[in-house]
Image (cartoon, rainbow, N blue to C red):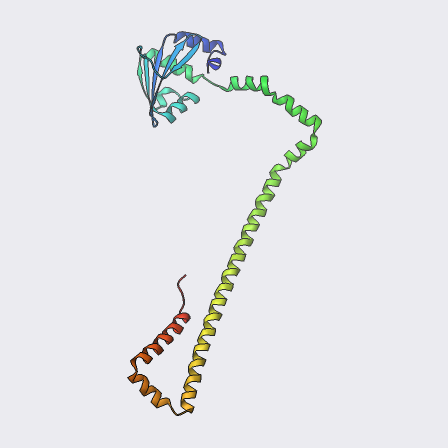
Length: 230
């Protein structure tokens, strides 16, 4: 930050105009306090300071960061509360308004990374890499289309599986129904042929336990035929 502030003549002049100024920053959400001591050759950040304070800034952390890294005027920052001498506050706002880390980042990249030389080496040594990089957007688009087709295919397969399950469930219930009806018809025909239809019915009317067992057996078979809730 000091390199960015002192990198230009205008920045050094604004720092010199604020030499000796102490700014207390009290952030909300989360809560913390930071003291900024401004000198003609840079700034110093402290978490504790017992001297007098010239400017007090208070507000949410997001609003403070937006003010520092944007070019908006201090008057437009409604979420911030700034107290102090109006002349110094105006000088501080002007300093932050022209503050930018981009020149420092650009110089660091030029000194350490040298992107232009790196791209030149890649063009000279491995031109195939640039050709693959040029086709990367189309490859990403094709991959997205394939994923969409796979998703549609999975949905179709799931629908078919659900349909097969419903058909198997209906076929099973139909088998149980025919088995129950067939068993009852066979028993009734045997009793009718043996001439024990009346006697069996009368015996069941007097035998409560046998009648209850017969009712329970029929209820269990019928319960298997009823549709289940999904």
